[in-house]
View 1 (cartoon, one colour):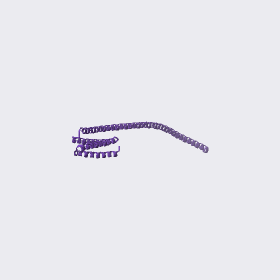
View 2 (cartoon, one colour):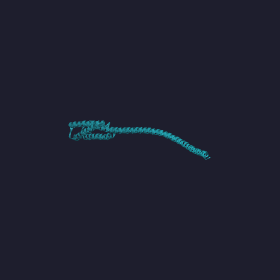
View 3 (tube, rainbow, N blue to C red):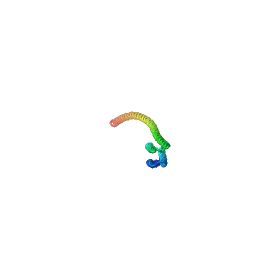
View 4 (tube, rainbow, N blue to C red):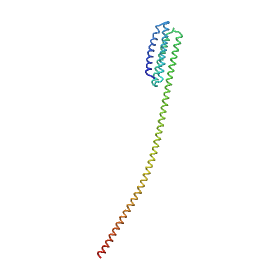
Length: 222
């Protein structure tokens, strides 16, 4: 919808309505054939106003919902104004004849029906837009739920992998602890063997020194 085009139509309607209102105010000044001719001009002006209002309704079909509802109510008010001018002219023109009364009644009925249809169409469009918005909201909720479920699955899978890694690390730590225990036992056994070897070596050295001293004593002093 072109808001500029709608505003142009709105201005055009304002001009047509103002001319129609002035003509309705002047109708009492005429009589006879001149009055009939003037009333025909009023009929043409009414048709022109209705055509402009029909064009405004067409421009509103693709408008946003909030703006469309507001302008639909405004157009409905315009149609009521035109219908009121028709009724006022008809009530003031008692001598115009049955044909004129029928024509005004027809215009009034058409305007009332059109206003009712516009109202029903606005309600239907509003309901359709609400349904579409609800459907889109549900679709977004489904997408979010699916994404959340996928993220949850990925997290659970990652936690499972981390658990396996922790269990492997725990097993490695247990094996390392057992190896360290065996290493400590081996080191203690080696330490005891070294000490034993040192004691044996010291005893051997002492024995050799004693023997050597005995031999020297026996050889040089006896």
